[in-house]
Length: 372
Image (cartoon, rainbow, N blue to C red; front, side, top):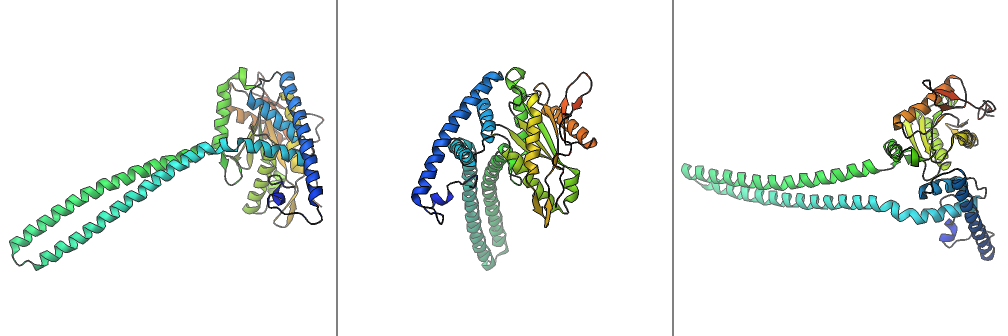
């Protein structure tokens, strides 16, 4: 069943071959019933986790932990059913601000077209008048009369020029307004249209907001930097295959985080991931889930079977540091893992410049499997 369209055939009034309407309805009813029970179960578990881990009961905290618990649900039909309900509840709120800005841009564009039309009409009338005056001047025999006629023509030209110039200024002003609207859309946009994940600017804005919340209310959050492994990069024979691999990794990682979490592409084959309500003790398990999900996603690129593989550096997010400093901590752990040919390392602040740690019992060959 597709993740984002689990009612595709039903919405068109079509039935799959061999399925009876009664059996289909019975299956839907069963899924709905299980989904309701699972919804209550996950909600109770989420509330208990908020209490057990002393996490402030803000709606976004409940939502982030709820999504994490939902991701652990094994029944894909039930999981998608609950997700679709959640998405339908939030859709309108997500598009109102963007729609308002776009509508304002179209209003400015309409004004520009109207003003350009007026300028063109004014120029057309001016051209007609000039041609008529020139025709009259050609008929004049008296040099003094020709001189006066030319003087009148130049005065009319100067007057018309000033009028057209003022109209053109209005076009420029409306263009500037429309350009500002487009800049606002770009500035407030959330997604990298190529990879389908949060863009870098939005990601850092979110980190800055978390820093402003302060230590008392920020909760325990974590930051991860994942880089394509040297073995994966070596196996990619073209820029097209590199882009394809990067897209697939971004999608897989995006599927492993909640709506309140964020992921962006940092450049140089590295992703940054910010996850809310992840304690220091949970970071290792989260890394394992990331690596495991990629390990299971062997793909074909350039007619070759490729194993998706990353190296991860992680750190606890410290709201007392800047977003850049938090990123540097995670990247420091990443570089240490890369230098030690390990799958991951976790940054741990100390009195020294900073040290990293790796769980000794973690299989360092995790994800490094041979392609048959």
